[in-house]
Image (cartoon, rainbow, N blue to C red; front, top):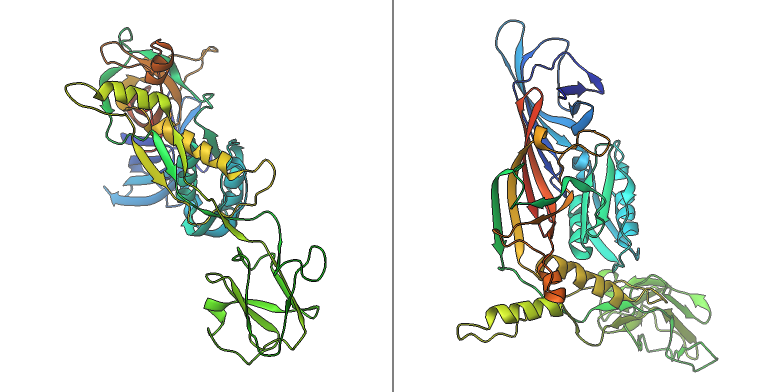
Length: 471
């Protein structure tokens, strides 16, 4: 059987004389954590905060991170007892906040951009080679947010599992990517005796099978020339009279970006009325023009002279003109049948609304924001349109099957497997509603608590869920 060993700074050290240790393996913002008790820590085998710590089961890494807290107590004149708390490299995601606008049109590209904007300003670089999610997304404006919070909100939106692996590589992949398989890929609780202390919980407390997306604003594809084609094809112009300072635009500009104002062919410096101007004032700097986004107007600090041609170009702020509605019809049918009994009447519909305060989206061919909305709806339905099943079980490393090559397999958060059990009423409800066939239920490992039973035996407490969200 494999032995449990420890590495400090990449090399096995003589400090390994561990009587107590535990690991909590999680995906998402919390990352992995480990607690280790070194009962006889002798100089120079010292351990300090910031040390790289790796725990192995045989040749397989089961934790890799660094010490964040060290508590020492001297038991005699030579030896120390040290309790060391460790975290994995997910912690470095939040060392710097991000404040940016991400215009990427796929989840994978947006994750890579956020990683570049945030964590790679640190000494410890988190790479993005494990990012593989092609779902369309609506661009995001991020205001001083931790990278892990941003990644989790994006994962909830598009349906993804993410974590930082032992090689400091960020993995962000869709739920339908089932390549990260658990050691047991199809667990039948009716016939398997490898697992013990099984607990299964089913809940319909937070069902959503109908999603209503409220009106939202987005950036128009084409430039607008105000006030229309009054002087030549494709261009528009206001005309100064020597006294008028304020001119009304056809649309509210989306932003100062891609906006220009000229008077008599001379470009003006554009400012925001609410931030830089004194509303209602006039008579000042002839080089300035102020934009009022709320009222769709521009105001000159000094009135353009009579007959001056005033040209304004910008991208307009447009709005989705109606509420979009998405349904999971099979979930609606299931809950209608479930609830229409004992004198109750139900249509099976459980609604939730979503709103986007600003969706900075350039409407170009193939990048329709409604495709992104559909992807958001599908991800939400995958998690919330059916009863939430969560559970735990325990299994020893000696009972965990080896892989086809005879190698040890490790239980880890983010792994995928299927579970079934007639006595537990566990099967894929959506497949059963569509085809009448009861197949095993897909679930994801959300957390694994690992502790040693002997120097050659691990005990896993495996937490799983159909929602694939961190605990």
